[in-house]
Length: 80
Image 1 (cartoon, helix red, strand yellow):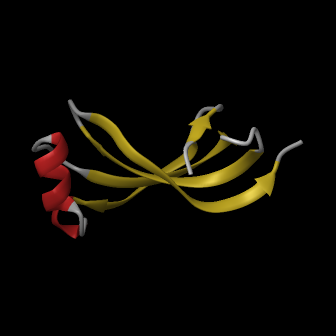
Image 2 (cartoon, rainbow, N blue to C red):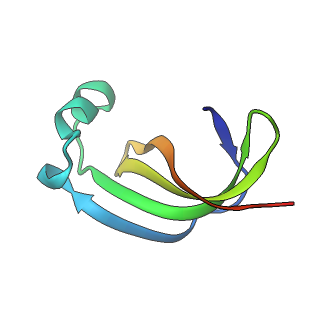
């Protein structure tokens, strides 16, 4: 489901780098070669139905390429 990140991402952690990323070959084919990292963090998002949630996001990033392929991993709290 598409979503919009409406707050800064906080508590950012990198939990896989380079060959530890299962999707590394696909990332390099689609976005280019780089020092790829898989990261996670907490942010507020707005879903397409305008519901707002605090979620744990996961994404890939590489220097010079940026953050790619955000996905919601866990819904933590519904915001009012």
